[in-house]
Image (tube, rainbow, N blue to C red; front, side, top):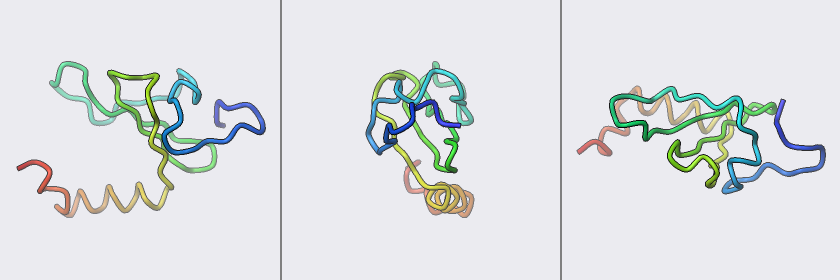
Length: 84
């Protein structure tokens, strides 16, 4: 369940702190000094992303389909250009 109160709207760019402090995960953290992307699965199936070094900053909100497409594309090498 989302951490928002009834009637509050979850939107792209909203302050991540409004989604709550619990439920965030760091699936892509590594040896980068703690700077990583954190994700939270929302109650309606969408996914929120935030920067771990700015936990109160903006959250990017993606549909389940958008996130699945991104992950599959990354697995297929479509995001490799970001590494060069």
